[in-house]
Length: 269
Image (cartoon, rainbow, N blue to C red; front, side, top):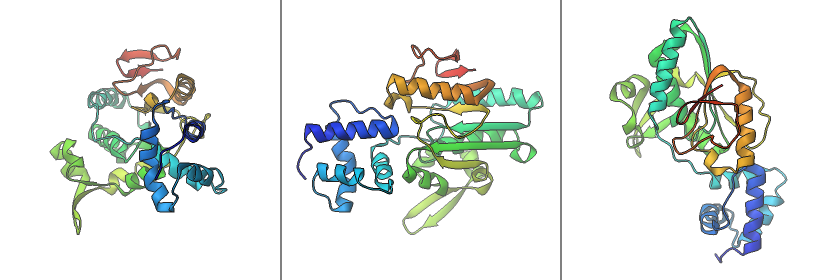
């Protein structure tokens, strides 16, 4: 497979930005070619321009989804940035004590499911979900990771960050021909609706209002224009007093949003 020429790379960059809001830097040729080469081999397409033409001429739109699946970065883990879940526990206990019994959450870039399952585990440790009306919307642009999230099966390495008591409480240990997996129990799965959503295309179809939105470690892939539109939509969909969690490496500084800072990476409407 020969290298990618500059014009073809620029056309891929423009298409990926248009369809996902992901802004690839001008020196990301190696990343792009590494990510899409597996897909090209599956289609038996030898050069990058031919694959670009294939994507652009696919009337079903399915190949654009495959391209974005390949480009999307999906680095996640259970209880990642754990202080967010400590804060969530603190707020939920306060709200439950005040008598609130309806809760809505959104995991905006849910990847392979570790974040949404962590959210509903955290919730379930505060109050029995059968005693209230609780739902979590989990969205991602990648159909591939959504399928994995819906299966809810993780190998032993993946579940190491889950406290032992919670692992035993919310997962079943299953022996398969390829090794041991841990399967999320139905009591957690039934609280979550998984949907495909492109965070760069606003307005979003859901109504809200949400108590908490987790939009972590995804805005780093967007430029400021896409970030501002996304933040405005999240602000609209949050209830007054609702919280936004972003990644520890992210900041709303300079975004001119209406959010107020609670502490680094946690904001309130």
